[in-house]
Amino acid sequence: MLGAGLTALSALALAICYRQGWILYYGDAEAHLDIARRILDSRTPGYDQVGTVWLPLPHWLMVPLAMRDALWFNGLAGAIPSALAFIAGGLFLYGAARRAFESPAAGVTAAAIYALNPNTLYLQATPMTESESFLWLAALLYFTIRFRETQGWGSVIGAGIAACAGTLTRYEFWLMIPCVTVYLLWAARRRRIAAAFVFGAIASAGPLFWFFHNWWLSLDPLGFYRGPWSARAIQGAADYPGRGDWRVAWQYYRAAAELCAGPCLPLIAIAGAAAAMLRRAFWALFLLLIPAALYVWSMYNGTVPIFMPVLKPFSYYNTRYGMAALPLLAFAAAGMVALLPHRTRAIVATLTIAAAAIPWLVHPAPSYWITWEESRVNSVARRAWTSEAADVLRPLYRPGAGILSSFGMQGIYREAGIPLKETFTGDNGIPFDAAVRRPELFLHEEWVVAFGGSDPQTAVNRAARNGIHYSLVKTIIVKDAPVIEIYRR
Image (cartoon, rainbow, N blue to C red; front, side, top):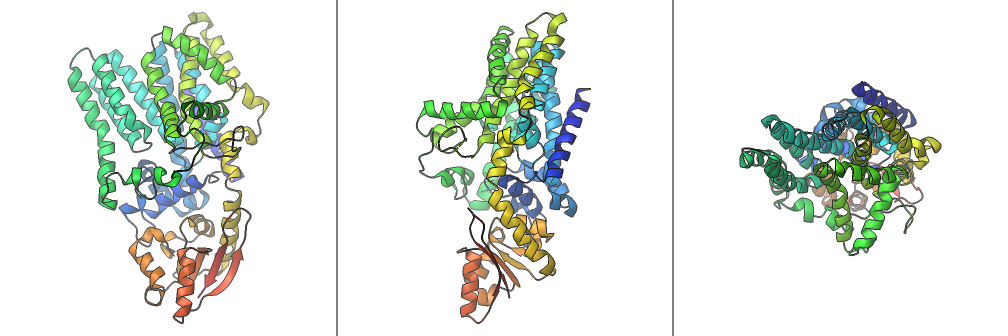
């Protein structure tokens, strides 16, 4: 029954987002989808197209669907894996809460509060990584709770696989490995060292693989942390709110979590957390707290800024990171249900779910969903120039002509129905660099689509000095966006 409900919710949300054209509002959603496509559809296809910063598992899961042109063009290739992860994650959260509180009503409460949140439903209909992260977190919680009861090897292996998959999805799972290892040493009644070792060996395969991956591609095993495209390099020395100030970091993250969860759920969760501790659900609360705590720490370090419309600088950036607290709040709220007599649990569960959902029912417009609003506000300009450039190329481009392109323009070609192997970008490495630096020898593309002042635009100027002329077909000027120039040889 719960699985059918989650599936229906997921399908309805996905259908709405698809019909409204919201699936690829997030710039990162477009990028995740196009990384998956590039692995097999590129001028230089291959393993290295996954890059060295974003963890690879979400992209690998999209590849089979992304290679179907129709699903790539409309974005569903990236949304479908997220939707499936949402359904599976909801079932694992139900199972974890049911076991922890020995109450099916508590399990339904936790899963329903998470699943009925419109921010959850929106993100699970996009190629973002929140749904996959939730799945592996809920699975890890379920298997560790199950191990305490069964002491079985299946739970140890299940926890190891969930943790390993999580470490290849989001970096916060890396911190969970030592925490879960210590928990298994404490919870095991026999063969403690063996259980901890087996879990650690399976879970650590993810980070070890990523170190090797980065070394193989960049000769730096820590390239994801200190390379030119890392969060550390991108943020630089900018003085974002919370940097070096624990109080402000906590204030900003708490506000983000409240905007994602709604105003009622945090209050319910505080009471529920006290009830959960009375039921000795300490481990579950601690494990679910780790992702949110890591974001606060990252804000303090200055690597993960979060901007919201309710705090300076009154804008939108990374508000979705507040979603990391939602599983904790949902699980804690379920604790209140478990503390009451059996005959009243169904009623209290219904009231708890309704109370958490009331703000979204009172304000059903998507502009009240902070993740949707962030994706909309930050994509207005990108969607405008993407659509305009695609409209120019769609009727004029002929297969095989080739396009020298600035980085980050894959959405243009997806909308225009042009395979990425027809494009030539910085993702193609040395051949691209050669074409930009020596266009008289290596630039053969008929088209150039470039941001003003970018390497491809510079290549057009260099080509002109060597007798190779490109005519300016279209200049696209959109407010709050760089100028785009489309040239034809």
